[in-house]
Image (tube, rainbow, N blue to C red):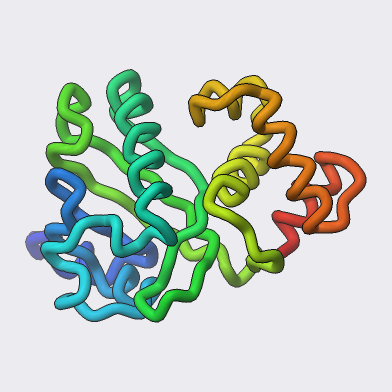
Length: 182
């Protein structure tokens, strides 16, 4: 006879950060999340996910993108810049699933993977530059980025030019390579 599975232990010791959420509030998280965000349980449990974002605007815009994706597929994934409790910014892969796709933020489970060991933030980027950089890494065109962010493709091109300058890249593929290399 096999011993009963202890789901709490599996959640707590998972090799990736896990968060249970309700209405964009952190209901529970595992030790990996606490370590990744350099936070205590008291700093995260019951708090809005906003505490993990560099700015309020990034929190709001990401929430809007999540709703659009979760409404159609029930899950969401991206790479974005997040913020540790001490204020340090880092690249993070985030994926999640709504327990009810019809109510995307009502309840969900989210995974977080710290990418800072292989991708460093080398330039001081604005919130919009961080968003556009993340979408360029995904391989999206200016038109698709503009559609996702609700801005014109020309606006995306302006931010891409700023990123090219900040990273000393001549082309978008070179920029993406430098973003990925850190």
